[in-house]
Length: 423
Image (cartoon, rainbow, N blue to C red; front, side, top):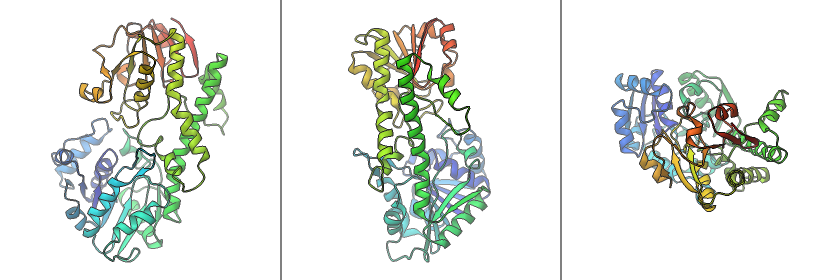
């Protein structure tokens, strides 16, 4: 089968590689010429994606995967076109569809009669049918006859995309029954996974938003419980472990908000007016307030932040992935500086230029001699730090550390909803 994958970023490239590894002929399309060059050379542009480097080199060497910036040419030879273009929010908090619309406009004139187009991304409910299908149908094509359209949201975790592609059922919703049938057959053949076929595009779109909003609200609840725990000197992690021993309770971990491409973004797709969104908006507000709450608590512990030397460790949005989209490290930087602190940033996955681009002063190696360290993303490289040499106080912004490990290394420990512990 000939497949074009439009958008070979952190999700699209592993998908393209996985399809090629199962014997299909795949062309990856991207506007980033440097990324295209990397792929055609068999060089992995996403080094922290597990298993991708070896598999990419293999399928390129075998001639089953190539990349191009010429989307129309790639689409013209494809039976299936997978749109893996990420959708973020704009300055007003609404879905920014411009990159995806540009991809549709580039692909539409070149679509072969009977092509199957699958949107493998996340969208506000109704977007595929009301916005994207008309773009693809421009020029007189009849959806359901001349082209077939499905929505199948990515359900993948950066850093383990290749594993997750076959770890969970693939959710599919079609423009019509024939579109759904073709999309289900495609995924069964190419990935060999279980399929959950939903009755419409809209149902599939909402299913993905449900996943993201659930997690955001769950974390918001955990963050409120953490604030109660702080008031009474309770360790919220003890509370969560106890509550989660009951099989109907699945509390997540509190921290300084939520970052990345997904969880802070998808609730806003519900908040655009497609339906009730009071809870989604409340969860966003709770989580967005957590960096300020954490910095206030740090300041109270230090007796104020004016002139204090603070290092933020781990600027990525989560551990061991070099992605800074919507990272709460920026919120921490803003709140710390607003209270007069002197702030440095450190991340072993980012070079000096990337750290400066985030607005941080890069911390010298190794990080030493600060008044406090804020652990934002606990990369594997941090697990053996001599905490007492970094700073006398460690604020665990993700509740990722064991307090006893920190205190044994000579530093005091405090977390989100976790009381101060001294060495």
